[in-house]
Image (cartoon, rainbow, N blue to C red; front, top):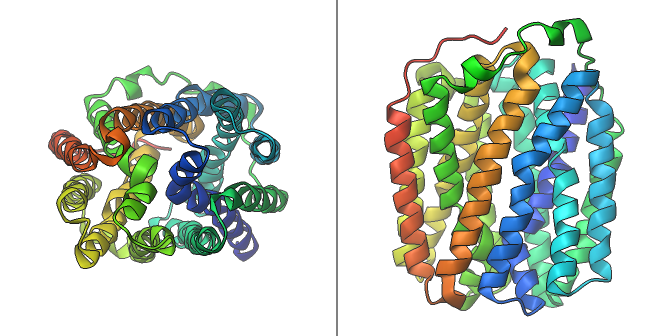
Length: 384
């Protein structure tokens, strides 16, 4: 148990270290390549759209073979290879194609790791939080290190740092022990439609989609936003690290939080706090204290919401439907929601002139999501 815990924690560390590079600095790198805000939004929308169909394809393969490990390992290897193409590319279409291929393989990894992790710890929110927090630590380390490197050199360091982290991610996937799902158990209860068409899941799904739409301005332009407000380059990673540190606290306390609150309550609270976060970002970004406070609320919008979502999916889908349930959630919520959010952010950002308006719209999207989550019926534990 301890060995598997260590291996999974290590894998989460490097998987989310990749996001510690991409989330704060992707927009800055594309700006370094002289892409306009609309082009940045379009690139991010296309790249994020791979989550619409990619995870489902990988999950179908996993369910058919019952073997998760080869998918995790091959996804990590090909993500590394595709990302390395950026060493030689700089044009809009070339960069978009390379990053789309990278994202397709990169997105094959997480759903399978989530299934392996939750199966290894018998779905315990306490142990899941402790494993997952290492992903947050990986995010922090790379975000701070990259911010310092960009401050000292230039945004050109984005590519070599990414290649280094992805190489280590692939190497760590070689250590994971993944359970093999027997084919006979897969053939039972294969019909997902009753679960997908359930009112509670529909409301949960749309609320999550709107949450990801609200993250569009943040994922696409927050780094540029900070620089345009005359904060130093290292502050880009610093502000995001504040949020991730708060997120780590949530993962550590996950066991106690889930003992005293229902999944529905946690979803609603997370969405309301996220709406507050975007509103503060819109109107008070020139205040160091208020912008830092807004980042603390990332613990709710990502850490708490993600943990609650994983528990919702675990309870809603049967054991032999977990891969597909995860894939449907990631495809629709992160794929469609993320792509739509990035595209709309590119339209409304207007090279920084529409920053306040973009984050205000994000706050409205989160409020609507909270209202939908409030309507979710009481959930029964149907997972087996």
